[in-house]
Length: 347
Image (tube, rainbow, N blue to C red; front, top):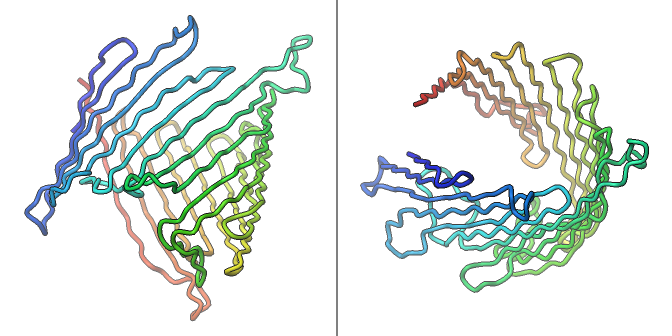
C-alpha cells in the first residue's frame, strides 16, 4: 500500500507499507517507510536544486534493533555545473518483507561534481563540431556500520569527454580504487582472495560511441590497468541495428582477461536483444544471453499488448540451458511461461 500527497508546488511526500504472513511461521513480517522530495527551478533565479530522502523500517522477530535503512540526497542538476551528494545507510538487521537487499551493515557516500562548458559558436556552428565538454568526478565510499572501517573508496574521474553535435561521443576516465574485503572473495573457480586483504589499484577507460539515431550505432569501451593484486584488460562492444521502423537488434559482447598472482582466467558475455514494435499497442521482445562463468544461456520472450491506455496484457516465456561438458552440448535447466493483466484505476 502506498499513499502520496503534494505538500507544496514542487514537493511531495509518500508513505508505504507491506505486510507478509509466511506460511511456515506465525510471525508476520512487515515493512514501512516514508520518503519526500522538494525541488525548485528558481534557485539563484534560474537554477535547479532539489533534495530527497527516505526512511524504511522492517520487522525484527528477535527484537534486537538495528532494523532500518535511510538515506537522502541533495542535487544541483544544471547545464554548466552539476553537483550531488548522496548518503545512505542500511543497518545490520534490516530485512524487507518483500524483495531483497544486496548487503546490510554499511553506510555509503556518493559525491559528484561536474563542469560542462559549451564552446563558443562561430558562424552558428560549434568549433570542431563539439556541442559540450564534460569534466568531473564521482565518488563511491562505503564503510561498515560496526566499526566505521573502510570497505570501498572509489573515484571515477572524467578527464575528458566531448559530446558532438552529431550526438557522437568520446570519453576518457581514470578510476583509482581502494577496497578491503570483509569476506573471502571467490573471484573464479579455484581462485579465492582472502578476507581482510586491502587492495589499491587504478583503472583507465576509453569510450567511443556513435549516435543512437543512426541505423547502425556502436559504442566501444576499452579498459585496462591494475585489478586487485594483478591486472585486468576489458573490451566491450555494444551495437544497435535498426533495419526498419519498429525493429531494433542489439548485439553486446564483453571480454575480460584477468591475471593475478593467485591465477589467470578469462570471462566472456554475449547478449542479443530483438525488439519488434508491430504498432503503438503491440510489442514483442526477445532476449538471449550467455556467459562463460556460469556456462549458462537464457532466453526470455515477452509479448505486450496495450488493450487501452493503462490496461496492459503480458505473456512471458523463459528458457534456460547449461553447457554440459560431459555431453558436449547445451541441456535444458528449466522453462516456464506466465501471463499478467495490468489494470490502472484512476480517480
